[in-house]
Length: 64
Image 1 (cartoon, rainbow, N blue to C red):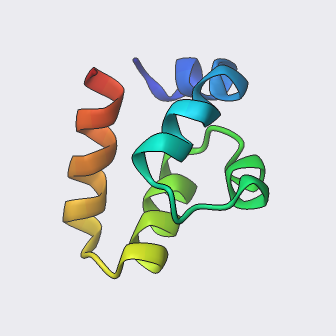
Image 2: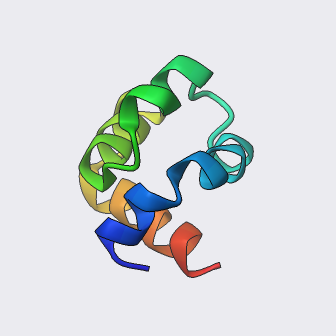
């Protein structure tokens, strides 16, 4: 799934993202609007992980 597909399907994927990263609030997920970089940044912020780790998590989540 590329970035455009992620943005287009974001409303459907928010529930899955919420399950994957429970510390993200509904408001934060709404603000992300399917933007991969925003999602990576929020994961870094909430979970205290390096950018590389956050990107790895998003990549694995998108592949599932």
